[in-house]
Image 1: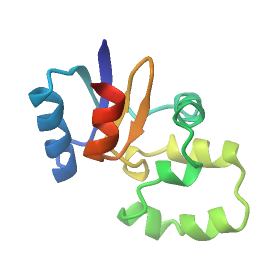
Image 2 (image 1 turned 120 degrees about the vertical axis):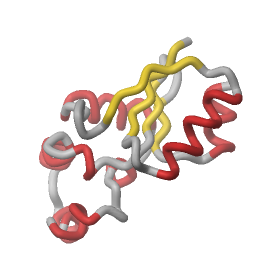
Image 3 (image 1 turned 90 degrees about the vertical axis):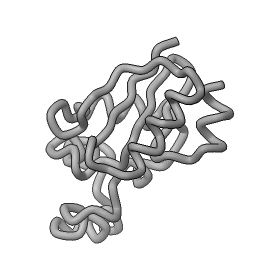
Image 4 (image 1 turned 45 degrees about the horizontal axis):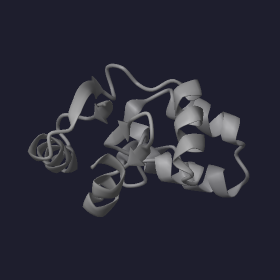
Length: 119
């Protein structure tokens, strides 16, 4: 199994996640989230497969998230379609890292979840 590892190289959490993948022998392909941002279709498919709420795909600690007032827009009833389209406009809006395999979609780095899904 080769995972798709979607990352922002300057992110410190990404460094921990990548180290974890390497230490556990998980093969992966790197994808820079800003240079090759996920499409709305990819994000919608991943969200559905992950079982996570759509809001978990937003980088809520990012400057862009705050600048664009996305929390208020989501609270006001932004549709899923609009949210995925917005996420697809800028990789900095997307929570990362993301790992996509045939059997799992993981958003953010939580060692226990990764261990359960990838080992």
